Amino acid sequence: MNDRDALAARLATEFRARLGRPPAGVWAAPGRVNLMGEHTDYNDGLVLPFALDSATLVAVAPRDDDLLTCLSLDRPGGAALHTDDLRPGAVTGWPAYVLGALWALGWPQTRQPGLDIVVTSQVPPGAGLSSSAALTCAVTLAAAELTGLEPDRTTLAAAARRAETDMVGAPVGIMDQMAAMHGQTDHALLLDCRSLTFEPVPLPGQDTGLALLVVDTRISHTHAHGAYARRRTTCEDAARTLGVQALRDTTLTAVETTLVGEQQRIARHVVTEIDRVRTTVTALRHNDLTGLGETFAASQASMRDDFQISCPELDLAVDTLLDAGAHAARMTGGGFGGCTIALLPDAAVPTATTAVTAAFKTHGLTPPRAFETRPSHGATRVC
View 1 (tube, rainbow, N blue to C red):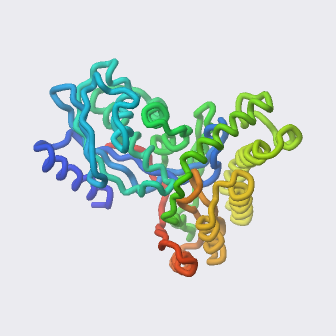
View 2 (tube, rainbow, N blue to C red; view 1 turned 30 degrees about the horizontal axis):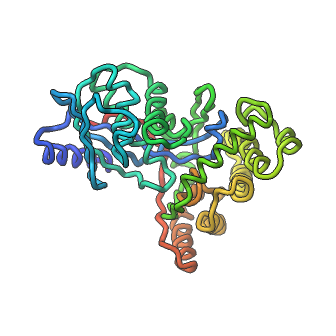
View 3 (tube, helix red, strand yellow; view 1 turned 180 degrees about the horizontal axis):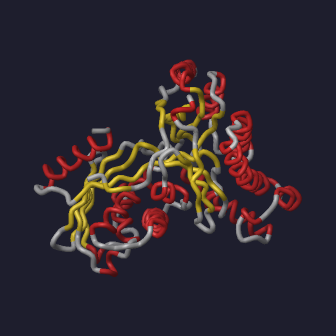
Protein backbone atom coordinates (compact mmCIF):
# COMPACT_ATOMS: atom_id res chain seq x y z
CA MET A 1 0.00 0.00 0.00
CA ASN A 2 1.47 3.38 -1.01
CA ASP A 3 1.22 6.60 1.01
CA ARG A 4 -1.88 7.84 -0.82
CA ASP A 5 -3.72 4.53 -0.41
CA ALA A 6 -2.83 4.45 3.28
CA LEU A 7 -4.08 8.01 3.74
CA ALA A 8 -7.29 7.15 1.87
CA ALA A 9 -7.87 4.20 4.18
CA ARG A 10 -7.32 6.39 7.25
CA LEU A 11 -9.65 9.05 5.86
CA ALA A 12 -12.38 6.47 5.24
CA THR A 13 -11.96 5.17 8.80
CA GLU A 14 -12.18 8.69 10.23
CA PHE A 15 -15.26 9.40 8.11
CA ARG A 16 -17.00 6.37 9.60
CA ALA A 17 -15.91 7.26 13.13
CA ARG A 18 -17.16 10.85 12.89
CA LEU A 19 -20.33 10.33 10.86
CA GLY A 20 -21.37 6.82 11.81
CA ARG A 21 -21.39 5.40 8.29
CA PRO A 22 -18.82 4.69 5.57
CA PRO A 23 -18.15 7.09 2.71
CA ALA A 24 -19.31 6.21 -0.77
CA GLY A 25 -15.72 6.67 -1.91
CA VAL A 26 -12.49 8.62 -1.56
CA TRP A 27 -11.17 10.90 -4.31
CA ALA A 28 -7.79 12.64 -4.66
CA ALA A 29 -6.49 15.60 -6.64
CA PRO A 30 -2.81 16.62 -6.74
CA GLY A 31 -1.10 19.86 -5.99
CA ARG A 32 1.11 21.27 -8.70
CA VAL A 33 4.52 22.75 -9.38
CA ASN A 34 4.95 25.15 -12.25
CA LEU A 35 8.17 24.55 -14.17
CA MET A 36 7.82 27.76 -16.18
CA GLY A 37 5.24 30.47 -16.81
CA GLU A 38 4.60 32.48 -13.64
CA HIS A 39 1.67 34.93 -13.75
CA THR A 40 1.13 34.22 -17.44
CA ASP A 41 -2.07 32.20 -17.01
CA TYR A 42 -4.43 35.10 -16.34
CA ASN A 43 -2.77 36.94 -19.24
CA ASP A 44 -4.02 34.21 -21.63
CA GLY A 45 -0.44 32.94 -21.97
CA LEU A 46 1.39 29.62 -21.86
CA VAL A 47 2.34 27.68 -18.72
CA LEU A 48 4.20 24.45 -18.01
CA PRO A 49 3.01 22.89 -14.73
CA PHE A 50 3.11 19.30 -13.57
CA ALA A 51 0.96 17.49 -11.02
CA LEU A 52 2.66 16.62 -7.75
CA ASP A 53 2.74 13.14 -6.28
CA SER A 54 1.12 14.57 -3.13
CA ALA A 55 -2.59 15.23 -3.09
CA THR A 56 -5.69 16.40 -1.25
CA LEU A 57 -8.18 13.64 -0.49
CA VAL A 58 -11.91 13.86 0.12
CA ALA A 59 -14.24 11.18 1.46
CA VAL A 60 -17.83 11.79 0.39
CA ALA A 61 -21.23 10.22 0.95
CA PRO A 62 -24.67 11.39 -0.20
CA ARG A 63 -27.37 12.25 2.32
CA ASP A 64 -31.13 11.75 2.18
CA ASP A 65 -31.76 15.46 2.72
CA ASP A 66 -30.39 18.72 1.27
CA LEU A 67 -27.75 19.41 3.91
CA LEU A 68 -24.14 19.95 2.81
CA THR A 69 -21.50 19.36 5.49
CA CYS A 70 -17.72 19.41 5.53
CA LEU A 71 -15.05 18.58 8.09
CA SER A 72 -11.25 18.46 7.92
CA LEU A 73 -8.78 16.13 9.60
CA ASP A 74 -6.17 18.90 9.40
CA ARG A 75 -7.97 22.14 10.20
CA PRO A 76 -10.44 23.28 12.86
CA GLY A 77 -13.96 24.25 12.03
CA GLY A 78 -16.28 23.05 9.32
CA ALA A 79 -19.61 23.98 7.81
CA ALA A 80 -23.18 22.75 7.44
CA LEU A 81 -25.45 24.49 4.98
CA HIS A 82 -28.72 23.72 3.24
CA THR A 83 -28.42 23.62 -0.54
CA ASP A 84 -30.87 26.49 -1.03
CA ASP A 85 -28.62 28.69 1.13
CA LEU A 86 -25.49 27.97 -0.89
CA ARG A 87 -24.27 31.20 -2.48
CA PRO A 88 -21.17 33.45 -2.44
CA GLY A 89 -20.68 34.89 1.03
CA ALA A 90 -22.67 32.16 2.77
CA VAL A 91 -19.55 30.40 4.05
CA THR A 92 -15.98 31.52 4.68
CA GLY A 93 -12.58 30.01 5.39
CA TRP A 94 -11.51 26.66 4.03
CA PRO A 95 -15.13 25.35 3.82
CA ALA A 96 -15.80 27.99 1.15
CA TYR A 97 -13.53 26.03 -1.21
CA VAL A 98 -15.37 22.78 -0.53
CA LEU A 99 -18.91 24.08 -0.75
CA GLY A 100 -17.89 26.55 -3.46
CA ALA A 101 -17.06 23.59 -5.70
CA LEU A 102 -20.64 22.33 -5.28
CA TRP A 103 -22.03 25.79 -5.93
CA ALA A 104 -19.94 26.06 -9.11
CA LEU A 105 -21.36 22.73 -10.29
CA GLY A 106 -24.86 24.21 -9.97
CA TRP A 107 -25.98 22.37 -6.84
CA PRO A 108 -28.76 24.82 -5.88
CA GLN A 109 -30.16 24.97 -9.42
CA THR A 110 -30.12 21.23 -10.18
CA ARG A 111 -31.46 20.12 -6.79
CA GLN A 112 -28.69 17.62 -6.18
CA PRO A 113 -28.68 15.65 -2.90
CA GLY A 114 -26.96 16.73 0.26
CA LEU A 115 -23.44 15.48 0.87
CA ASP A 116 -21.16 14.78 3.81
CA ILE A 117 -17.52 15.57 2.99
CA VAL A 118 -14.39 14.97 5.07
CA VAL A 119 -11.04 16.19 3.75
CA THR A 120 -7.34 15.76 4.44
CA SER A 121 -4.24 16.74 2.50
CA GLN A 122 -0.61 15.95 1.81
CA VAL A 123 -0.18 19.33 0.07
CA PRO A 124 1.11 22.00 2.47
CA PRO A 125 -1.12 25.11 2.50
CA GLY A 126 0.43 28.48 1.76
CA ALA A 127 3.44 26.97 -0.01
CA GLY A 128 2.50 27.96 -3.56
CA LEU A 129 1.76 24.34 -4.50
CA SER A 130 -1.95 24.92 -5.18
CA SER A 131 -3.44 23.20 -2.16
CA SER A 132 -6.64 25.17 -2.81
CA ALA A 133 -6.99 23.91 -6.39
CA ALA A 134 -6.27 20.36 -5.22
CA LEU A 135 -9.16 20.69 -2.76
CA THR A 136 -11.69 22.17 -5.19
CA CYS A 137 -10.76 19.68 -7.91
CA ALA A 138 -11.06 16.68 -5.58
CA VAL A 139 -14.50 17.83 -4.44
CA THR A 140 -15.61 18.65 -7.98
CA LEU A 141 -14.64 15.24 -9.35
CA ALA A 142 -16.14 13.38 -6.39
CA ALA A 143 -19.45 15.26 -6.58
CA ALA A 144 -19.71 14.83 -10.35
CA GLU A 145 -19.05 11.09 -10.23
CA LEU A 146 -21.33 10.45 -7.25
CA THR A 147 -24.31 12.21 -8.80
CA GLY A 148 -23.88 11.01 -12.37
CA LEU A 149 -22.87 14.34 -13.85
CA GLU A 150 -20.78 13.84 -16.97
CA PRO A 151 -18.82 17.00 -17.74
CA ASP A 152 -15.34 16.54 -19.20
CA ARG A 153 -12.28 17.27 -17.09
CA THR A 154 -11.72 20.71 -18.58
CA THR A 155 -15.28 21.68 -17.64
CA LEU A 156 -14.64 20.35 -14.12
CA ALA A 157 -11.42 22.38 -13.94
CA ALA A 158 -13.36 25.51 -14.94
CA ALA A 159 -15.92 24.82 -12.20
CA ALA A 160 -13.16 24.32 -9.63
CA ARG A 161 -11.64 27.63 -10.66
CA ARG A 162 -15.02 29.36 -10.40
CA ALA A 163 -15.28 28.11 -6.83
CA GLU A 164 -12.13 30.09 -6.04
CA THR A 165 -12.86 33.21 -8.07
CA ASP A 166 -16.58 33.62 -7.35
CA MET A 167 -17.14 31.86 -4.03
CA VAL A 168 -13.85 32.52 -2.26
CA GLY A 169 -12.95 35.75 -4.08
CA ALA A 170 -9.41 34.74 -5.10
CA PRO A 171 -8.47 36.10 -8.56
CA VAL A 172 -6.75 32.92 -9.77
CA GLY A 173 -6.08 31.72 -13.31
CA ILE A 174 -6.95 28.31 -14.74
CA MET A 175 -3.48 26.71 -14.63
CA ASP A 176 -3.72 25.05 -11.23
CA GLN A 177 -7.05 23.36 -11.87
CA MET A 178 -6.03 22.15 -15.34
CA ALA A 179 -2.85 20.63 -13.91
CA ALA A 180 -4.83 18.93 -11.15
CA MET A 181 -7.34 17.48 -13.60
CA HIS A 182 -5.13 16.65 -16.59
CA GLY A 183 -1.75 15.81 -15.01
CA GLN A 184 0.13 12.84 -16.47
CA THR A 185 2.77 10.66 -14.85
CA ASP A 186 6.33 11.73 -15.77
CA HIS A 187 5.07 14.64 -17.88
CA ALA A 188 4.54 18.36 -17.58
CA LEU A 189 1.53 19.99 -19.22
CA LEU A 190 2.13 22.62 -21.89
CA LEU A 191 -1.10 24.56 -21.50
CA ASP A 192 -2.47 27.40 -23.59
CA CYS A 193 -4.54 29.33 -21.05
CA ARG A 194 -6.66 31.01 -23.72
CA SER A 195 -7.76 28.01 -25.75
CA LEU A 196 -7.27 25.50 -22.89
CA THR A 197 -5.56 23.17 -25.33
CA PHE A 198 -2.63 21.25 -23.91
CA GLU A 199 -0.02 18.65 -24.70
CA PRO A 200 2.14 16.49 -22.44
CA VAL A 201 5.87 17.21 -22.35
CA PRO A 202 8.09 14.36 -21.07
CA LEU A 203 10.26 15.21 -18.07
CA PRO A 204 13.52 13.46 -17.17
CA GLY A 205 12.60 10.07 -15.71
CA GLN A 206 14.18 8.19 -12.84
CA ASP A 207 16.39 6.32 -15.29
CA THR A 208 18.14 9.57 -16.30
CA GLY A 209 19.84 10.09 -12.96
CA LEU A 210 18.04 13.41 -12.51
CA ALA A 211 15.71 14.47 -9.72
CA LEU A 212 13.16 17.22 -9.16
CA LEU A 213 13.62 18.84 -5.77
CA VAL A 214 11.09 21.19 -4.20
CA VAL A 215 12.21 23.46 -1.37
CA ASP A 216 9.37 24.90 0.68
CA THR A 217 10.78 28.01 2.35
CA ARG A 218 7.88 27.93 4.84
CA ILE A 219 7.63 31.66 4.23
CA SER A 220 4.31 33.24 3.30
CA HIS A 221 4.51 37.02 3.48
CA THR A 222 1.34 38.64 4.72
CA HIS A 223 0.97 41.03 1.78
CA ALA A 224 0.99 38.28 -0.84
CA HIS A 225 -2.73 38.16 -1.57
CA GLY A 226 -3.14 41.90 -2.07
CA ALA A 227 0.08 42.14 -4.09
CA TYR A 228 -1.09 39.33 -6.39
CA ALA A 229 -4.33 41.17 -7.05
CA ARG A 230 -2.49 44.45 -7.72
CA ARG A 231 -0.21 42.81 -10.26
CA ARG A 232 -3.17 41.29 -12.04
CA THR A 233 -4.81 44.71 -12.21
CA THR A 234 -1.59 46.22 -13.55
CA CYS A 235 -1.49 43.55 -16.27
CA GLU A 236 -5.05 44.38 -17.29
CA ASP A 237 -4.29 48.11 -17.31
CA ALA A 238 -1.16 47.54 -19.42
CA ALA A 239 -3.15 45.49 -21.95
CA ARG A 240 -5.67 48.31 -22.26
CA THR A 241 -2.89 50.84 -22.75
CA LEU A 242 -1.46 48.66 -25.52
CA GLY A 243 -4.88 48.13 -27.08
CA VAL A 244 -4.79 44.33 -26.87
CA GLN A 245 -7.09 41.76 -25.33
CA ALA A 246 -4.35 40.41 -23.06
CA LEU A 247 -0.59 40.76 -22.67
CA ARG A 248 -0.23 37.50 -24.56
CA ASP A 249 -1.13 39.49 -27.69
CA THR A 250 1.65 42.06 -27.53
CA THR A 251 5.39 42.11 -28.20
CA LEU A 252 8.44 43.06 -26.20
CA THR A 253 9.07 45.95 -28.58
CA ALA A 254 5.57 47.33 -27.99
CA VAL A 255 5.98 46.98 -24.24
CA GLU A 256 9.31 48.81 -24.18
CA THR A 257 8.25 51.61 -26.54
CA THR A 258 4.70 52.24 -25.28
CA LEU A 259 4.66 51.53 -21.57
CA VAL A 260 6.57 53.21 -18.76
CA GLY A 261 7.29 52.55 -15.11
CA GLU A 262 5.49 49.75 -13.31
CA GLN A 263 3.33 48.84 -16.31
CA GLN A 264 6.44 48.33 -18.41
CA ARG A 265 8.15 46.17 -15.80
CA ILE A 266 5.11 44.00 -15.19
CA ALA A 267 4.30 43.57 -18.88
CA ARG A 268 7.92 42.84 -19.78
CA HIS A 269 7.96 39.94 -17.36
CA VAL A 270 4.75 38.46 -18.80
CA VAL A 271 5.83 38.73 -22.43
CA THR A 272 9.31 37.32 -21.84
CA GLU A 273 8.00 34.62 -19.50
CA ILE A 274 5.64 33.32 -22.19
CA ASP A 275 8.65 33.02 -24.50
CA ARG A 276 10.55 31.22 -21.74
CA VAL A 277 7.82 28.56 -21.60
CA ARG A 278 8.49 27.77 -25.26
CA THR A 279 12.25 27.80 -24.68
CA THR A 280 11.90 25.45 -21.70
CA VAL A 281 9.87 22.96 -23.72
CA THR A 282 12.53 22.98 -26.46
CA ALA A 283 15.31 22.47 -23.93
CA LEU A 284 13.46 19.55 -22.31
CA ARG A 285 12.80 17.86 -25.65
CA HIS A 286 16.48 18.16 -26.61
CA ASN A 287 17.85 17.27 -23.16
CA ASP A 288 19.59 20.64 -23.12
CA LEU A 289 20.38 21.07 -19.44
CA THR A 290 22.57 24.13 -20.05
CA GLY A 291 19.80 25.89 -21.93
CA LEU A 292 17.30 24.90 -19.27
CA GLY A 293 19.50 26.38 -16.56
CA GLU A 294 19.86 29.64 -18.46
CA THR A 295 16.11 29.90 -18.99
CA PHE A 296 15.37 29.21 -15.33
CA ALA A 297 17.93 31.86 -14.32
CA ALA A 298 16.34 34.42 -16.66
CA SER A 299 12.91 33.65 -15.21
CA GLN A 300 14.16 34.03 -11.64
CA ALA A 301 15.76 37.38 -12.48
CA SER A 302 12.57 38.57 -14.16
CA MET A 303 10.43 37.60 -11.20
CA ARG A 304 12.87 39.30 -8.84
CA ASP A 305 13.52 42.51 -10.77
CA ASP A 306 10.57 43.11 -13.11
CA PHE A 307 7.55 41.41 -11.55
CA GLN A 308 9.05 41.75 -8.07
CA ILE A 309 7.46 38.65 -6.54
CA SER A 310 10.58 36.91 -5.26
CA CYS A 311 11.88 37.53 -1.77
CA PRO A 312 15.20 37.07 0.07
CA GLU A 313 14.26 33.58 1.24
CA LEU A 314 13.44 32.39 -2.27
CA ASP A 315 16.57 34.01 -3.71
CA LEU A 316 18.68 32.32 -1.02
CA ALA A 317 17.17 28.91 -1.77
CA VAL A 318 17.73 29.28 -5.52
CA ASP A 319 21.34 30.47 -5.17
CA THR A 320 22.16 27.71 -2.69
CA LEU A 321 20.68 24.99 -4.88
CA LEU A 322 22.70 26.18 -7.87
CA ASP A 323 25.88 26.28 -5.80
CA ALA A 324 25.12 22.73 -4.64
CA GLY A 325 25.02 21.35 -8.18
CA ALA A 326 21.52 21.98 -9.53
CA HIS A 327 21.30 22.28 -13.32
CA ALA A 328 18.34 24.66 -13.03
CA ALA A 329 16.50 26.34 -10.16
CA ARG A 330 13.84 29.03 -9.77
CA MET A 331 11.00 30.07 -7.55
CA THR A 332 7.62 28.62 -8.45
CA GLY A 333 4.10 29.80 -7.72
CA GLY A 334 2.59 33.17 -6.97
CA GLY A 335 5.61 34.51 -5.09
CA PHE A 336 6.33 36.43 -1.86
CA GLY A 337 7.34 33.12 -0.30
CA GLY A 338 6.46 29.53 -1.04
CA CYS A 339 8.66 27.15 -2.96
CA THR A 340 11.52 26.73 -5.38
CA ILE A 341 11.89 23.94 -7.93
CA ALA A 342 15.24 22.54 -9.04
CA LEU A 343 16.44 19.90 -11.48
CA LEU A 344 19.62 18.27 -10.25
CA PRO A 345 21.54 14.98 -10.31
CA ASP A 346 20.15 12.30 -8.00
CA ALA A 347 23.51 12.17 -6.26
CA ALA A 348 23.36 15.90 -5.45
CA VAL A 349 20.02 15.77 -3.62
CA PRO A 350 21.40 15.06 -0.11
CA THR A 351 24.11 17.70 -0.48
CA ALA A 352 21.68 20.29 -1.82
CA THR A 353 19.17 19.60 0.92
CA THR A 354 21.80 19.94 3.62
CA ALA A 355 23.18 23.11 2.03
CA VAL A 356 19.79 24.83 1.88
CA THR A 357 19.02 23.92 5.48
CA ALA A 358 22.41 25.24 6.59
CA ALA A 359 22.01 28.47 4.61
CA PHE A 360 18.63 29.17 6.20
CA LYS A 361 20.06 28.50 9.66
CA THR A 362 22.96 30.86 9.00
CA HIS A 363 20.49 33.61 8.09
CA GLY A 364 18.33 32.96 11.16
CA LEU A 365 15.41 31.64 9.11
CA THR A 366 12.90 28.89 9.83
CA PRO A 367 14.29 25.60 8.50
CA PRO A 368 12.93 24.87 5.02
CA ARG A 369 11.30 21.63 3.96
CA ALA A 370 12.92 19.93 0.96
CA PHE A 371 11.41 16.94 -0.82
CA GLU A 372 11.82 15.09 -4.09
CA THR A 373 8.76 14.78 -6.28
CA ARG A 374 7.78 13.07 -9.51
CA PRO A 375 5.14 14.28 -11.97
CA SER A 376 1.91 12.44 -11.17
CA HIS A 377 -1.47 11.74 -12.73
CA GLY A 378 -4.45 14.00 -12.26
CA ALA A 379 -7.51 13.75 -10.04
CA THR A 380 -8.90 10.26 -9.58
CA ARG A 381 -11.02 8.04 -7.37
CA VAL A 382 -8.78 6.20 -4.90
CA CYS A 383 -11.28 3.77 -3.43
